[in-house]
Length: 250
Image (cartoon, rainbow, N blue to C red; front, side):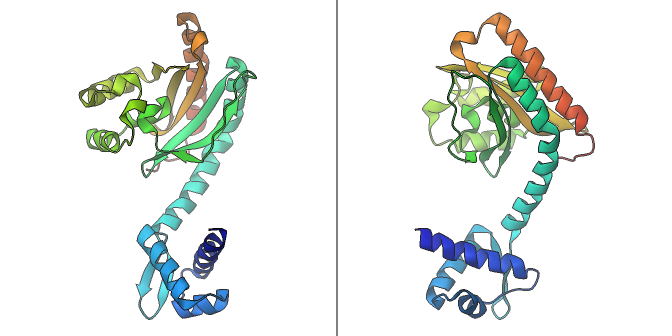
């Protein structure tokens, strides 16, 4: 598996470096000392995934829309996180719990940054992205700023219905609840072991990302919920105020 990944990334990196000039299969196989059949098989996989495009059969391949989009996302997120990270760090320390910022892209929720200041909780993010949109407060909040068609399309794509947050177990509840969440400007739900919150981050009134917080279920009391809304909601507003020059994507 590692050797296949090395070959795949080697081909992809060679094509990206050469872009906008295309590279053909023969040139790639020779440059990377690869078997031509192996090279062709990997090229087809990258082409089908959108990482590369075929300029022509004679010319070869160049970087595709997925690579270019990921590059744009990286630059955009760097600007977003430059503003957000100091606020998130300070907010996590203030609530003594877990705070993160996330965005949804291509059906997955990407955690851009996370800080946990509760020494009694071990929170390990095992991957950079998750297919858990309707299982998380930040995922649900972002859905509130999507079209009704997107809301249901994402809902119907959920692989495990039993993991959905309790408010969204019925499909008919999806749109009315998301309208209410957007009107209220935040979302709070109680899972089995924790209370989860999400607040929007805007730039020029355009939705950018979800600022989330989770606390142990024993701390999910009416008084502490007010504290979380004040502190974390205030952090979302602070980040939004600092992002007036960053435009939304996606």
